[in-house]
Image (tube, rainbow, N blue to C red; front, side, top):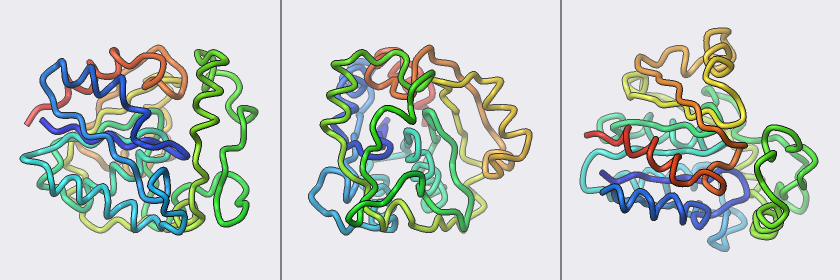
Length: 227
């Protein structure tokens, strides 16, 4: 099965290199996506541009696909399910949850010169970055691309309720499955509260398991990649 891999804020498709290699060994076709405005030299990209890129990758697949979103890009993966519910066989949400219709995509940090730059490691100290050594931190920070303001402050638009029938796996890195389930059951994630098939899976890592637990993450994804 084609497995589309969408990185979170600031990062391009290369962050999936190790996961993609493992998925290939497991018999799947990994498709890392470099989003418009996040590594392709298009600083004026919008959220609509990023959604279009993901949907185009779904359309280019030879059959049903598993769409994987990391962190903020969990919303992009969910938007793909909304746009193509008949083509998306499943959605994997790694370290994040989908935003609801009408919410801003990722207005989390200050905008500087029409982009939202990586804010440094301060906001991520603790469980998020506990398993990243200094070399990994330097590599991530040096590769980080400011997220265009048109992406960060783009408005999420969801329209097709068939998305709620698409199976979802929530991969829980810096938080536990019980914590994730409590967020959903408590009303903090209305999109998943309405989803009909939601599974929670633990992974012993910080917020970026594609760097620190690529083989384990690939195994989790491969086990859910069923047509």
